[in-house]
Length: 245
Image (cartoon, rainbow, N blue to C red; front, side, top):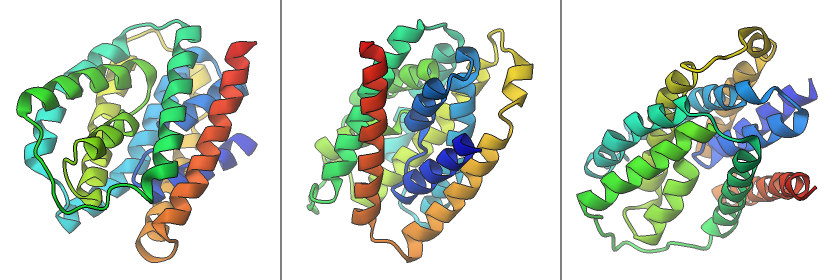
């Protein structure tokens, strides 16, 4: 039950700032001792149910820059499938995850004071296609949607407004999580163990819907980003200690 409550809270916080929470789901599942073979699938499924709501909201609001998103998706989706099919050593997986969490936490920590500009540049297509391929492969092999890496890069190159970057990140996470799940299912998966955790995507869905509501109507984005950053950096620290041991 505690694991389920944790997933609900993570989904709520991440959805409030436009992400899916995949990296934190992965860390919790590892710390909880869930069988390693099913961890990426659970995290990707939870990613999908959370960012689907975000994506619909951004699509309706017209925040998606298709010229920027399509080259990213064109290369990331097949590479997420390829990455999902490949096995990965657990220790290497934990190191990548710890780095991902640290990047996420620091990005969210400084997001509220960062990027106040109305001057944007459009990255060249060769850059976005290469970036999509690299992040898609990483998303598939680890079970991270990839948006936590994409968003800071788009901010750094001033590729669009904060709403546009959040929209592209949400859609990026969605399409790559779907592709990553398909790739992961090509491997030998202990389905009995997977069925044990059927309730986690449901709780993530509930938390994600509440997070969308909070994002739209109640909590200031700066406060939510700060709370999420503290949570993510704490989990990254706990995972780092486990790796060190």
